[in-house]
Length: 145
Image (tube, rainbow, N blue to C red; front, side, top):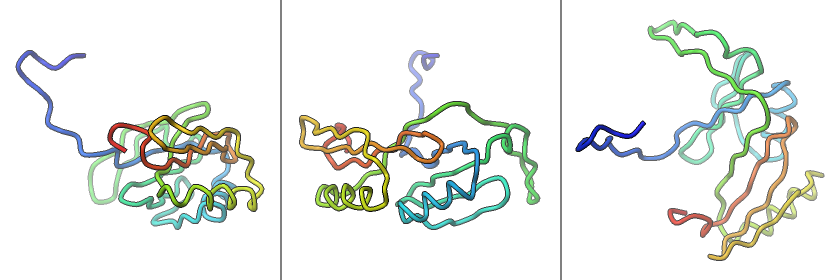
């Protein structure tokens, strides 16, 4: 739906959270913590929250976010969820691409694709345990990165 004529929305700063839905939180935690080096900020039986720079990666166990969640301090998070595999990318320094390539190989995580973009960026594509397509990308991929 387009904005009303003469009314532009306020600016957005960045994507703050990305949520993925996983079958087994323990298996996913082993991958994201063991292979990617992320550390949980919060976790319970339904989700794990990881800091990634100034953004947050949320992993929800399938079926645990399909009902509204009343918060003890007030307010409610509406139901959400998704099916199927998602795609997301982690930003890294250009000098770290080779180290990531070697680290993924040493961790026995197959790189499914590697793209050398026209502006000099490199993307490495691999899968998490639920089949989500993860990407490690160096600067130059987009006009704003």
